[in-house]
Amino acid sequence: MLSATLRSTRSPLALIRRVRAFHASSATLGHYPNADFSTFKRLTTGPDSEGRLVLVDFYADWCKPCHMLSPILEEISKDSTIKSGSDRPIDVVTVNTESDEGFELGQRFKVRALPTVIAFRDGKDVMQFVGALPAAGVRDFLQKV
Image (cartoon, rainbow, N blue to C red):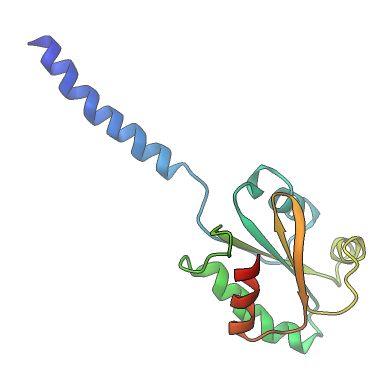
């Protein structure tokens, strides 16, 4: 009888452990506005980048095309149904090139015009686009990455 009781209690515990493990996983999507260097590094090359596609949006407040593209990228970061061509969840990191750290990052990745969006996968920059694309153009870009 004790053995039957132990068996019946193990199964719910195993189920609880599985549920807890699921909830302990990282968030599906993320948007990181005004990211600093440490956030950029953690999300593009650190352990938080594994299995994810990270779009880094280099922008400036004075840039009108940046203001057109930013809401599209923010919507992508909130919509869990949008996936990359490699079926990875998408994070969006926004880097202000007018800050000292943002300017340095822009130089490091040879950003010559704004907005520039660079896609990072497995710690490496794999693709980019320059200029404000419409929502359909951004989704086409994501399917190529």
